Length: 101
Image (tube, rainbow, N blue to C red; front, side):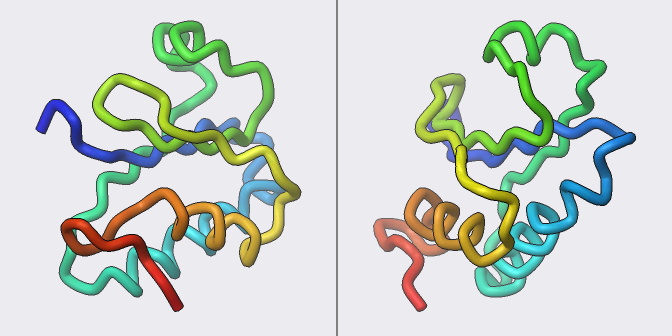
């Protein structure tokens, strides 16, 4: 469990419209993974400890974590297709297999 992969979406309530593509990509990926339990956390900008720990400066920010270590950060445009492509490269739905279309 210590090396569990998790997805962190750093969010600000006033940015919900801008964050829509992130939510769409996360929901679609979760659906594709079927019965697999995905560890997705929406983290408020008000969570100062985690925001400071990871040095979050912009919202929304999407991080893939391996345990407590950052594995990857999405830095592209707010487009659900691009976000989902990024997630598929970094998240495994089945043990030992990366997601593919």
